[in-house]
Length: 591
Image (tube, rainbow, N blue to C red):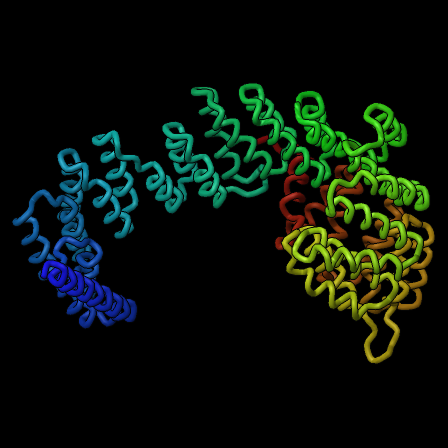
């Protein structure tokens, strides 16, 4: 009998709950469609069943106000206050009703009454503030939240206050609230990062970035804590100020040895963004301080990659010194593969690289390491124009590691090799899949090559120059820069005025830069900007010109001119933030 009664009660409650939910959804639909009288009938029923549900109540009063039934609101809310004067939040609704009637003084009386009531009824402080926020009375909402926090030490409304400051555009106050909240409970560090990231950019000279940094620095002086160093390092990394980020990470590491991993991660990020100086500092710290062999050899490997990238004249000796010190064994396996890569692409010694790789294969610990060696062996084959044999290697790895990054990398190499041998149809089929790769780098490279083929492949059996351009691309891949430049000159003569022209000019300019033929590179970049001011490579050309004049020719005035072109003429360019930052620095701005 008791069980049947229980089932009956459960059924009644479920039916009631479903009915309420259904009526509320229908009422909301009427409300959104400005059918306020129909909505009011449903909300009235909902309020009768749940008299103090603020969502139902505010909606019902809004319906009455939209139909000028202000007296109904007054009667409804006044009646509830007579029954329960402790419900101080009802004063906000009553005050807003007077404001809608253009009676601001009367409204102000009830708003003050609501806030004053928080002193005795702090539990309703959040409700009072939320109602103010809902009515867009943001300053009053902040006042209510702050008073509730003051009266009740267990109530924490820092995030709500910060968000309202953000809505008002008072970003310094917003950042201050987030930081103050974090000061009380640093377990919310990642949450603060998530919220503040909505307002800061990767431009260190953006106003909000400067405000946030100012708040953090001030806090770190008045109350030093690891959390401020962490936030500053995060901000500087986001702004690509990797040197400043390292300073913060070193401060953290001095207090907490676990932060060594963060320094390694920063080194990788700095390397990927060509800040080799900071990257090397990071890896030097790892080599010196880590107690893990794997981390140490990874850092050594990254330093060797920096030496190759910066064309360090001692790079050969550096590799030999590492092998002499640590041996050719399982521990140095990744360094052996990197050495082979260096022999292929920097020393033009693919056969010697193959010998190195065959030996490295004997030290591979698992199938992934074996696949990594095979990828590099296939690279050597492509370098030697042995495309079909290379494709066999790439295709096997692509099949075996289908859902792994190795498989995606192998698929891209299949596409690239097919492009080199002028099999554009098969190359595009692979690239189309890779544009959605989980690796952003592979996805970007795939998209670029896909566009190059799509924009320039022969149409209606008419030659487009893509075949020759792909051959030049292969020569550039093989570091045969002079031969590539000569072939691109032929493309520019034979296919002048066709879509391939700007691509050929840009590729050739980059090769001129490799050979330090700066005047020839400048000439090509300028031709691109003159051909079509709205061409897809124009902002790239202007940025390259700015970099060339700044870094190679030591002409800041000219560099500023080209950075400025991007800032004013190409505001959607991916180079905008970097161009603005470098322009301001060259201009001598001080922040």
